[in-house]
Length: 275
Image (tube, rainbow, N blue to C red; front, side, top):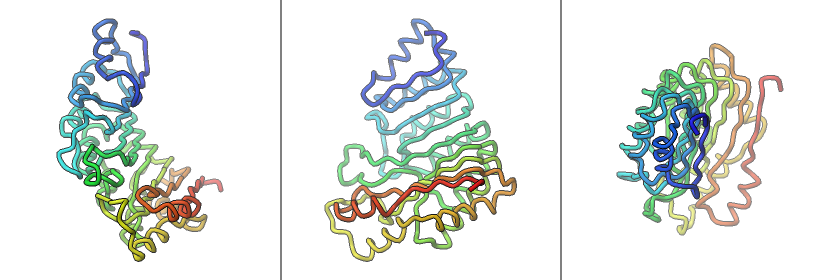
C-alpha cells in the first residue's frame, strides 16, 4: 500500500475515511493522484491533505452528501478550505462547484503550479428539490476569466463552462479573455445554451422567447467553432493553442420534444491548429 500512487473512490465506493485507515496501517504519503466522487464529510479532506504531501492530481466532486451548501450559489467553506490545505497541485478537477468566489480562493493557492484545470457542471441537487434545480458551475464573465488566467500562469490544459448569450459582445469578450492563458495548448469549452437562471423548474412551460434563445445558443457548426477559435487564438500572444473542443450543453430541464431536437442540433466540434 505504501507504494500506491493513485486511488479513485466512486459514488458507490467506500467512504473516504478508508484512506485514513490505510494511512494508519501502512501510510499513503507517496500517493500522486486522488479521485473522490462521494464525500460523506468535507472536513475529512483537510485531514487527508496532511497525509498526502506528494499529491499532484486531485479530482473532487461536490455531489457527495457531506458537501454542504449554505445557499444555492455558494459552496461548502470547509470543503474549499480543505482543498486549499493540500500542497500546490499540478492538476485539479472540480465538478459541481457553484461560486466564482470559491474558485478564486482555490486558484489563489494552487493556480501558480497548475498545468491542468477542469471545471465541470453538475445537475444533482442538494436535496432541496426544485429550489436547487439547474446546472451548477461558477459563471465567470470576461473579467473573471482574465483573473483566472493571471492566477494560473503555467496552465496548459483547461476545461471551462461558459454561458452563451446569442453571440453577444459580452460572450465574445469571454472567448477573448481565454486567450490570456499564455501557455494553454488544449482547451475544452462547455457552452451552456439555456439562458434561464437557477433554479429552473422543469414542470413550467418554457416561454417561446426563451426557446428561441435556447435554439440560437445551441446551434453549433464549423463556422461558429472557427470563429470561437479565432477569438481565443488571436488574443493569445504566444499562439500556443493547439486544439479546441466546443461542447454545447443544457438539455436537462427542457420538454421532451425540444430535448430530442436539440440533442441533434447541439453538436460538439473539435479543431486543431493543423486543420
